[in-house]
Image (tube, rainbow, N blue to C red; front, side, top):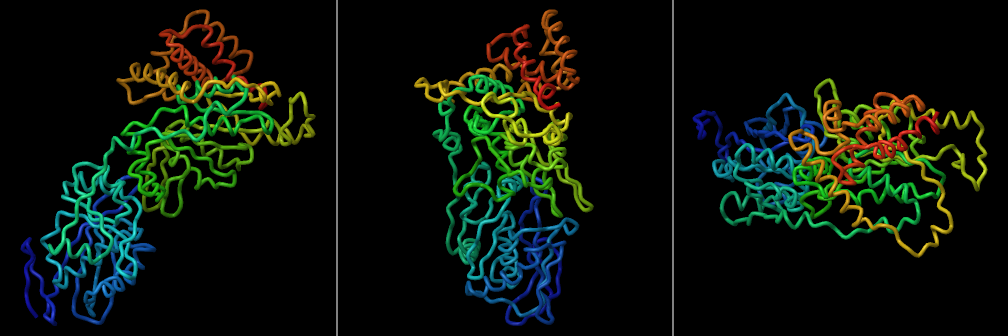
Length: 530
């Protein structure tokens, strides 16, 4: 038995059996919500029967890591101690999941046996999954982990090569990409060096070439106008029309007329993609606005987020982008109803017995539906075959409160042959985007002292301040409220849409014709859906 002392003055009793065993401490990290925290991986090797115990609330892949770590160490040519190994993941009162602790565990075991000098990497963070032959595999959540490491003042991060692009966008901390466990060990003990990975962020924000364009859409000029207003103000939109009228085609081109993400928006969106493992290979940041189109069989947890260990849903993956729900009435009613809260609050809070996490969910909802089950109600060329009961049952799947939260209601009729065969193309996405950008710039100047950026996010105080209307406009709005029975929420949305229309026309005041156009986008929920 011998007594050893670490650099902090702590004294440990260990024994000598060919190797000097000591307590090792390696820094790693884990994610809660979209933010990361530092995890201390403490490895203790003591005399006793061969065993490998992991404590600190490990789950799933963390509990299984001992087999991967053992094989990786042996197959990398290092000695694996045949003694009692205890690994503690601190703080021990938070559940740990994922395979990112494999690398720090292996390094901790090698440090505890004296192969690696412990004092050489106390300011570095390690993460990565180990394969049985010692290769380092990519893991999830690297971007928020890199941000947390920088905020903690650490010198650098050793991580899988495939994860380097997303960690490299965080400036002020060195990123060391590695392929194998032996490469990490050799770098730590000074046998070889690893060049830090760098990313040119400016190159990431070049707008990609459009694969779809509004010039592909024949006719539907009213629908294109509504899409432009929706993009300019960040407004939710629903399209109602028969099959083949172009609803899905229009929705999928909405992203082409939305401004590029700002750096802050890109960072926040990329953190969500990082923790979900959705970051495209070789891509450091998500720079184009997300477009998510979940199938109508999605569950409420899949749409909003949840699970035993809460994960983001589609509304969060679509953060700062577009959430497209095609065939809206085909979604289960309970799934649609849970959309109401994130549409208002712009975030989702998921509570479980052991944790509560909050995910951002600031998305534009774009929905499409047929007017009836067969799709031809009101179509002048096709006869509707649905009974009144079928139509009512179909429409009742969408509640009034949900419709109130959708700003623009748009009829999309069938396209006549003369529009389909027309030689002249309509406005391109580039032309519409230019107008949208001008309107967004006006909004940014107006709202620069607030925490919001678009007209759709304005609350009652903002509407009162920025959406003042004259007597003529007030009289017109009052008549519309009485005729269509619109709610107070619909009243607020009309004013916000009118403000966006005025911004597109670069008018400082909201006038009667702006309000009149805005009203026509709020009548469908009363005239068609009830």
